[in-house]
Image 1 (tube, rainbow, N blue to C red):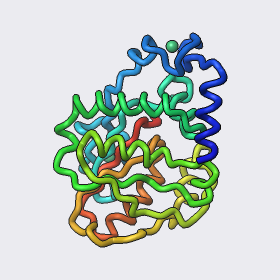
Image 2: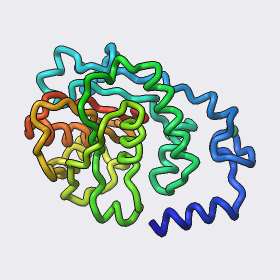
Image 3: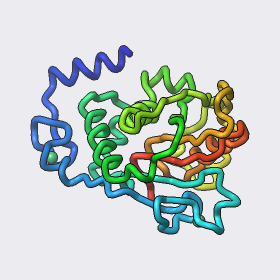
Length: 233
Ligand SMILES: [Zn+2]
Ligand SMILES: [Zn+2]
């Protein structure tokens, strides 16, 4: 909370520059915002093949706890959307939160068919220690924005029980090992038979999303659809 307050005060005192074109005024100027197009990335969560609606392809469905993976944009550190996501992860900035909100609204408007008939939204949790360091969970903020758009409840039913190293710097194998057994269920009432949208900021190898989806499936969840702002390609 203090971090958030400091960030807001800083915002008021120091001038801000657009993350896209460096123009003074806003973190994401209107011109640059218009260039971010949440076209959607619809690829199988396991083999990355392009598939309609991001639905897990036939050959992968047996091995994938995620039945689909939907992302708003392809992820690249160098692209504006990537910069916004990274920047927000470490600094709570109201202005960037509103950018996400707009992108989600545009995406849901265009793809309402894809996310209908779902029951519940569950964000990927942060470990309590990391939550205390950051003061907020980006995935939870995205989940609440999506919940607002889809008029679905958000449930914090997962808990991160292992303080893991940051995934970004690890190889694919190391990532899978890093998150194995890292999550557990806080409560499982109401989960059996439900269709859940699991939310995170970025889907890279999918190891974190898969681990969370596994825990949910074990609790009797019928279907888990992954939703992230961006997908590493
Ligand atoms: Zn700009
Ligand atoms: Zn596949």
